[in-house]
Amino acid sequence: MRHAIALNQTEHELWLARTPSGCYTLNALGREVAAWLTLAADGTGSLSVEGGERPLVIAQHGDDLFIHLDGANHHLRLRHPLDRAVSGACAGADDRVRAPMPGTALSVAVQAGDRVARGATLLVIESMKLETTLTAPRDGVIESVHVAVGRTFERDAILVVLGAAASA
Image (cartoon, rainbow, N blue to C red; front, side, top):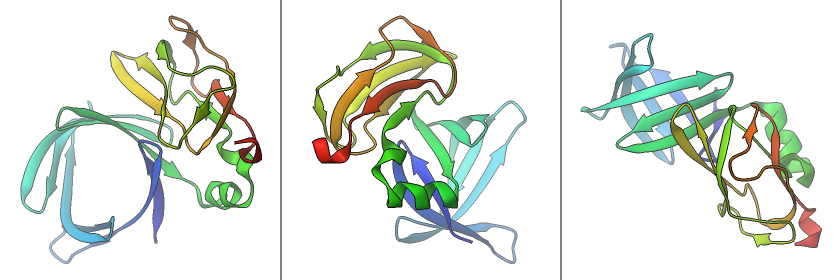
């Protein structure tokens, strides 16, 4: 089965196949690679890709994974097939940027009325000593910002709302 994931808010399609030796073949980004993940209960482990082993740390919250690999932090979210269908059918599915975890706003880069391009930094948050940059999921105009620097928020709180795509 093919799965959709959002990695740092960019969607990718991937699938895994198990080989007779017990290893996995990861099909992603137009490539097929041998991959193996070893993970301890505390979230520390290693990722082996094509024979090269790299340490990593993973924290999970629902469908969200926060991965520290090669000195960088990544946010990975499993996208449900119905969510994908809805986002393709109407622009409203990507209008709200929500908090992936409870935290504090470290910086806010936009204000109401600003035009943004997909991938533009909206704000930087901190949670459990992990800084995460939240970016625009699509081109648009900022309709409202619901957090200020230093303010705390809960998981799934609406932080930024984009205006209708037509207004961009």
